[in-house]
Amino acid sequence: MTNITIQTINSTLVIDSRLIAAELGIQHKNLKELIKTYQADFEEFGQVAFETQAGDIRYAETFYYLNEDQSYLALTFVKNTTEARQAKINLVKAFRSARESLAPKPNTDILYLLEQSAAAIREARLQASIAEEKVAELKPKSDAYDVVLESGKLLSFSEVAKIINSPGLGRNNLMSLLRDKGILQFTNLPYQQYITPKYFEVILVDTSAGLKPTCKVTGKGLSFLIRLLKDNGYTVPSKSLAA
Image 1: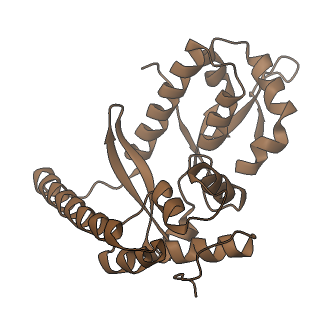
Image 2: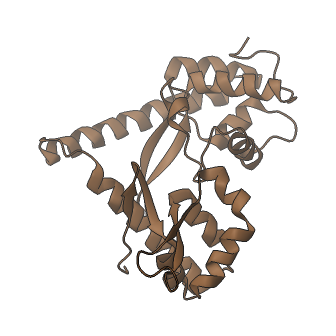
């Protein structure tokens, strides 16, 4: 992994745009022009901080401080080159490392925590398997709501779309709507104000690239999404948790 420096400014993790340009193997002035051209898009994820390097103003270089979402957005506007793909991997690792370094380190035996976590995962998988079997047995589909509430099963967005069964609504359309409504971030993780009321839970999923945070929907969140879809003109089953 290359040496990417993540800074904390006003409690926000940010990166110097010059480092992103270096990772991409492009000239910094081209990246600055891209950010300027699409500034409105970048500002959907926070204020774009324009900075001038200290020193003689006649020769000082200007640059941007980009937050995590803005950094990934910059990469989406660059062609899908080998450098761009590697840059995204490096950025993801760098921001994850920065978050971990800022997180409090509890004085707890790590082996005990891992054992408890593994046991909880096994139990959750067992309960999820039982709930899925019950859902498969129930007809019509609307009865699946009761099973979700009773089991406490956490749902993926694909499962939510199947349960709601609204015409034209799939996983991608649902997640796009939630991003447009300011519920999900660009990374498809929910904002804190929607985690606090327990509409969503963020869990760590073990992938080939390491542990990855993933959003899951609770039974309460399913009710919330049904109300949201109704308010936005979607047809939902007559029996719903939001009734």
